[in-house]
Image 1 (cartoon, one colour):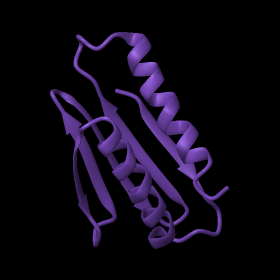
Image 2 (image 1 turned 90 degrees about the horizontal axis):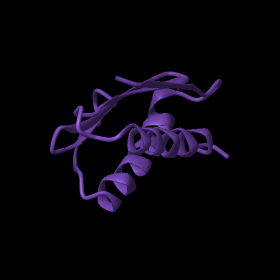
Image 3 (image 1 turned 135 degrees about the horizontal axis):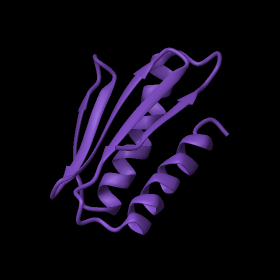
Amino acid sequence: MPQITRKYPGKNAAEIYEKVDQVMERIAQKMSLDYHKDGPAKTGQVSKMGVSGAYAVKDEEVTIELKFPMLVPGAMRQKVQEDIERKLDGLFG
């Protein structure tokens, strides 16, 4: 289960959560995923047919955990992970 962590020095949890929420909302719409978020806890989750991703935001950091069923090819897993990493790297760019 891949885990992605990105640090954003000087950014508080609310700032990071707002941006991550926007990114996850777009990913969920694009890939027809169910998206559930908890604003007060600054967490969220996307899922569909065994594929899921959960994120948690705290001051200066976001962590995302991805879960894929064994039937999902490695190349597809890698593409999803790289796409998310690219979006996180450009979050405040």
